[in-house]
View 1 (tube, rainbow, N blue to C red):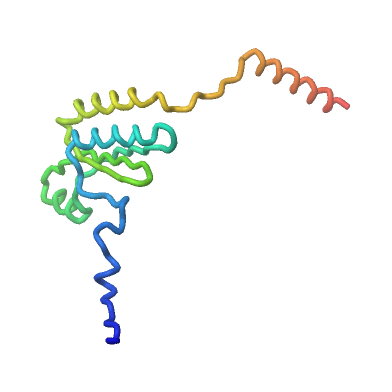
View 2 (view 1 turned 180 degrees about the vertical axis):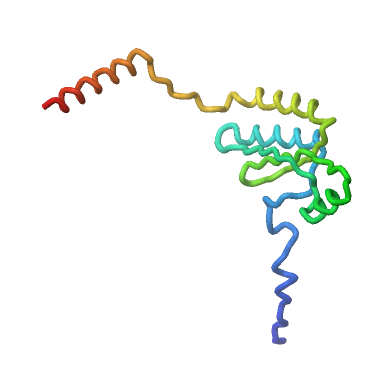
Length: 144
């Protein structure tokens, strides 16, 4: 048998599909909304979807400092990320696209709020009666 050749560890350790939840390049807003809808549909029975919005200039701190010292205006955009724990998607948008995106985003949220858990509410009268009874026994116990 021929001797086994040593494997190059650096090339075998990093494969393009090794991290499924890594953030890829930002999607356009329509693709992002379509993917977000499918995330909400997948998590209807079990799971959560986290959406974060953040102001970003899409530049490093050094680049921002250079622009500010040169007196140039920094163009801030809104970075939006969504994840369901398995898949992460993101998009960026400027102030001109914001109104249309927010309207579409609100429509998607309203359509998928049916899978939220109902909040357990106490009857106000029963809660008030229980508080009075608990308060009355404490007063009697403290007066002895």
